[in-house]
Amino acid sequence: MRDQNNKSLLEKIFLKTWHPYFWIVAVAFIVYAKILTCGFNYLDDNAFILNHQFFLKNISNVFEVFKRGFFLSYQDVYYRPLPILSFMFDAQWSGTSPLGYHMTNVIIHALNSCLLFLFFIKLKYRKDLAFFSSLIFAVHPVLTFAIANIPARTELLLGSFAFASFIAYVDLCERKKLRYFCLHLLFFAMALFTKEVAVVLILLYFLYSQLILRENFFSFRSVKLMIGWAVILLFWSWFRHNALHQFTAFSPSQMLVSLFTYLPAAIQLTGKAVFPFNLSVFPTMRDTTFAYGIISLALLAIGLFLSKQKRWPHIIFGFFWFISFLLLPFIVFSNLEFISEHRLYLPLAGFMIMLFEIDTIKAFNIKNKYYAIVIGLIILILAMITLNYAGNFKDRITFWESAARTSPHSSFVHKNLGAMYYLDGLLDKAESEYKISLKLNPFEPMAHNNLGLIYLDKGMFKESEEEYKKELAINPLYDNAYFNLGLLYARENRLKEAEYLWKKTLEINPDYIDAYKYLIIYYYGKKDLYQTKYYIERLQKRGIQVDPEFLKTLNLK
Image 1 (cartoon, rainbow, N blue to C red):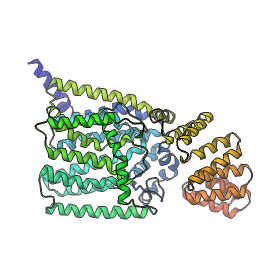
Image 2 (image 1 turned 90 degrees about the vertical axis):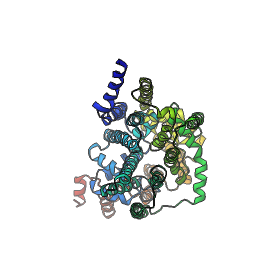
Image 3 (image 1 turned 90 degrees about the horizontal axis):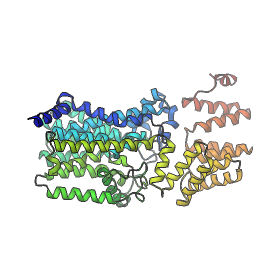
Image 4 (image 1 turned 120 degrees about the vertical axis):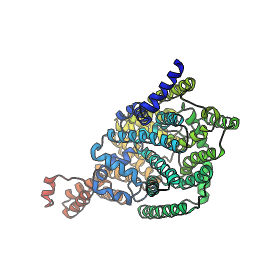
C-alpha cells in the first residue's frame, strides 16, 4: 500500500499538482542559467550584433530587415529575416551586452521544450512519456550550442514555428476550424521566413495525414491548405529574390555531391544524440569519431527489430522528420567544414519518435518506480554534462581554445583562436596560431590579413604589406584587407593609395563605418569640404553620430 501511494504521489507532483509546463521551464532555466553570464564567442555573433549595432539599434530598420540577407548584406545566400528581427528587439535594451541575447535564447528554448511536450501529446503519446522526453530535450547537452551561441537562434526560432505549425495542423485535422487553419499558415510562414529548410514541413504534413491519420491528403481541406502554402511560398520567394540580388542557385549535381560528402556527418551527429560524450563547440568530420554513431544506429535498429508493438507509420514519420531537417541544409549549402551540433535541434524530435516505438521505451510508466529512477538518473546525468559543457562558452578565449582542443586539424579554428589572442594583446600567441592555420590550409581566408595586423603593430611594415597582398590575392573581395592596407599606406604617408583602398572598401561593403571616418579625416585634412560633407552625410544616414562642434565648423547640423 505504501509503494502504491508513493507512485501516485510522484505522478501527482509532476503531472497534476504542478503543471508539466512549470517543471519543463524551471528545469531549462536552472540548467542554462550559466549561459546568462557568458560573453560573445566571436563565431558570427560579432558579425550579427557587434558590427551592426548602428543598424539593429535603429528601430526604423524593421522593414529593411526583409530587404537584406542574413548577414545584413545584399550579397548573401541566406534569407532569414525573423532571427535578425529578434536581434533588433534585443538590441533596443541590451545593446552590446550579451546578457539580453542569451536571455532570449534561453527563453525560446524553454518555450520549445514546452511546445515539444504539446507536440507529443498531439501525436497521442502518453502524458508521462511526453513529459519526461521533453525534460530530456530541455537539458540535452547536444543542444547546448543552439542555446549558448547567439546566432544559433535561427534553429531555436525554427523549432518554435515548426512545432507550433504542426500542432495547429493536427488541431485543424481533428477540429476543422478556421482559427487553426489561420494559425497553421501563420506559423508555417514564420518558419519559412526563419530558415529555408522549413519548406520540408509540407512533406511532413503529408506523411502525417497519409501514414498516421490515414486520411486522403487531397481532400477539399487539403486543397485549401495547398493553396495557402503556395501563396506563402510565392511571397517568400519574391522577398528572397529581391533581397539576395547576387544569389546563385545550386545545380542538382552540386546538391547530390554535397549530400554524399556530408552524409557521414549525420552518423556522427546521431552518435552525439545518444552518447553526448564527445561534444565540441566547433566539430569537424575529421576530428569527430564515427563509433558512437554506428553504435547508436545499431541499437536503434535492434530495438525496433525486437519490438513486437512497433508502429511502422510512426517510425517512418519520425525517420523523415529526423533525416529531412538534418540533411537538407547539407544538400542546399556546400563547403561546410563546421558540422555543428545545433543542427540536431529539430531532428532530435524525430529521433525521439522512433525511440518511442521500441517496446522497452513505450512501456515507460511513471507509476513504476524503477522506470522513474532510471529516467530521473538519465535527466540528472544529461543536466550535469550540460552544466559542465556550458563552461566552454564562458568567453571568446575559452570558446576557441576548447575548439582547438577538440578540432586540432581545423585551419579555421586556429585562425580564430589567433584572432582572440590578438584582441587580448597576446601577439606572439596570435602569430603562432595564424601560422598553424596557414600550414593546415595555405588558402585560409583572413589568416594573411590577420598576420598583417600583427606585423603592423610590431612596426614590420614591409612584412605587413606582403601579408595584406597575399590575402587579396586569394580573397579579392575581403573589405578588411583593403581597409587595413589603406591604414598601412596612411602611416607611410602614401595617402593617395590609402584613399583608393578605403573607397574600394566601401565599394565592397557600403556599411564599413571606419572607412567613412578615415575618408572624412583625409578630405578634411586636404580642405576638401565637399567630399568631407559627402562622407559625413553617408555616415549619418547609417545612424552614426558626428561631433556637433565638428559639424558646426562645416555648417552642417
